Image 1 (cartoon, rainbow, N blue to C red):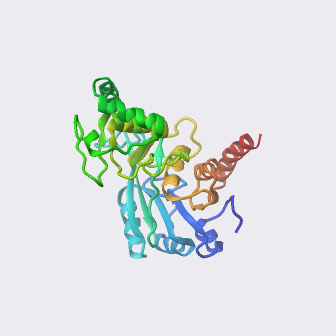
Image 2 (cartoon, helix red, strand yellow):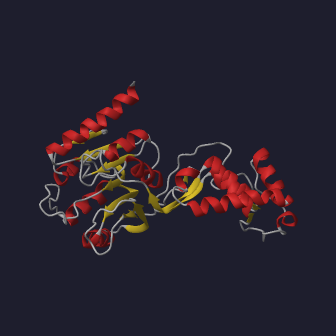
Image 3 (cartoon, rainbow, N blue to C red):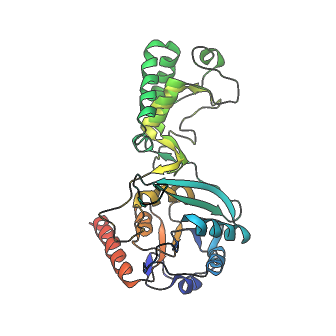
Length: 332
């Protein structure tokens, strides 16, 4: 089985040629079987395909599964019965109503992350502006915390320490005053410094997607050097602006609309953030229902390897054309 290739065939047959334990992550959007009359709604043997998922995955590999409704919950039950452990649920906020005639307007899709063995989700950072997209109230709160630096000598000193030394470790005497409480061994930071650190280091990913696009030798997993994990919240703000914020469990990315070549096309940036949570550079990613090739493009952009299957010739040709356009740009 060749790596970095898309195959125009039924994934239920093609996956049988993939060697055991050779894939690090499977990320896919199977047919939900609710779009009546659509040619992409082909039934598949769910249990047998998921057994193949288990065979080809590395011991701590992940399955990242898009879905909705009854089929989505049934798929996750089958994965559990096959020995997969549920790790996390992510919500994709599409900012777009896909079913305007329904009583409940649907603007999201659900994504489950399951793993074999003891696979753990990566702690990653999302750029501050991207993480705060549309959350005006949160940005205003951060600005108020920044303003407080001018009136609070302790916060001002903490921010100065962070900007000059990239350090957010303070003795209890310094952080035990205005708007701060601290005990040894706990991460307690002045709110102003927290905003500064968030702007500098980035924000922790939330339950709607997580990414790790920030790389700097200065930063550890907390974004700073420091033994006591005690800091000023103003530093947190500056840190998140510079280095990004931890990923959240709800990811807000506008869906592809006018540029879509597939009815259920996923934004490349969404796939990139999911890959950041579940893979490392040079990992092998499988998408059995690759459609528009968003997964392959995300792999190219993030230095992952890919294998994809698409049974429909029309979608296959359109997806390959889209992927080749990206590859040509990168090779220029």
